Length: 81
Image (cartoon, rainbow, N blue to C red; front, side, top):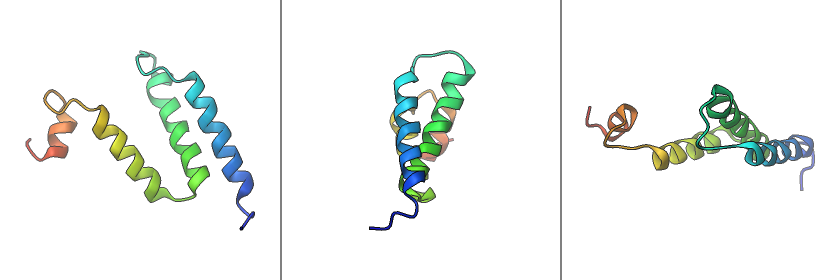
């Protein structure tokens, strides 16, 4: 097992856990709606050390949480602009 990147992985886990504890999906402040998910993505990158995996996870979560009938980005993603 390669332990060269272990400090980054441990930091990523701690960052993810900390963000999950303070995250509120129904929050209205900019910090809660933008900065916390961005820190989660940074923690996930630190954990897996693969940007493509983090991007795929973000895309899947965005697709799950989008309202495709009333969301401009959802319609764009579905190809029905």
